[in-house]
Image 1 (spheres, rainbow, N blue to C red):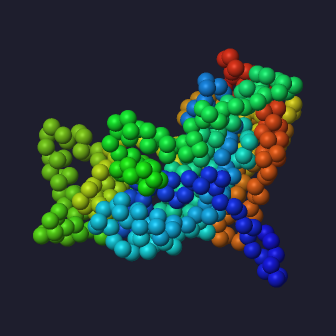
Image 2 (cartoon, rainbow, N blue to C red):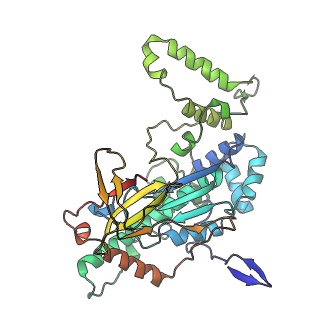
Image 3 (cartoon, rainbow, N blue to C red):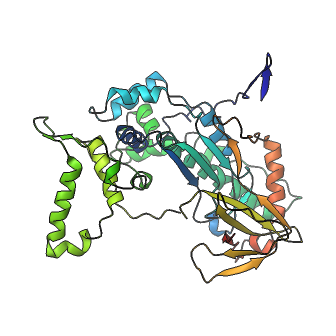
Length: 415
């Protein structure tokens, strides 16, 4: 915080390093979902997203987390310009209402909170690297750029750490990768060259605006899982494609047709198991885009669906023993306490651990407009590097070795 004539104000954070990182550096379906949320009156519902990964890169057993600063720079300056909103209007269906674009013009991230593990930390699959909380339509627009900014940065940093581990501390390592790098525009360039090579469209809004590539979009699993049932749908009318007829209750019509399908003997087993919350999501999306409805029908797995805290337990020699997750409101594990650690998905795999030190991994890096929450200051590059080196030294060598590394345990806490 800085003081100006006796008044406190938040420290100004510069914009993203790469000018390509704008609110349009997202997939079209993030805007289509934002409109569908707005159309359903759900755009201000509070949502919580976890950013995590499933497997370590390069066949290894650890990853170095990077890219957090760019994410904070992005949301601290998040604002759609009139030109960008006009472009989004051109890309979306002409049936989208004017009020939505007025809503886009007022969006910022003042109601968004970001909690994250410190940049440069050694991290492992399934443990959330970041937790983003805020209005569902806003945080949905942040999903793609956050994943884009974190994935590549963490991949390269992990690769560099692996080189340093092999070379040792005494060797001089020089990086000459610019001429063979994937960017600076990374994903934007990839979209351009995929189109050049024969693809027909992209979901990348920035590439669409820059290069005139056709845009196509649907929705994601987050939209499907955001509904609980048909009762949430308030706007139920749907006009025919030519506008000559109107169905006043499209929700009831879908239930009628579902009942007919259930009565068919050949399909009774399939449609008898229809999930009403998922059906509500598809119906709501169809109501939002009556002329160009494109649904994502796929399987999905919600990665331990709750608001979580994450801790790292250390042994008496100073090495990390295990990472452990708990519910947000559960009491945290304590040093010297006998703790039952359970495998996230296998009930029979469990062990007791008595840590000598407990580190709370998740800290608030962006509290939004919450004045009572402290915000972690972004460290300098040198501080992040020092933290990274310290983190690597706190890992047992059997976890770090290149050949046949020992898997690091990620568990659930039984408070």
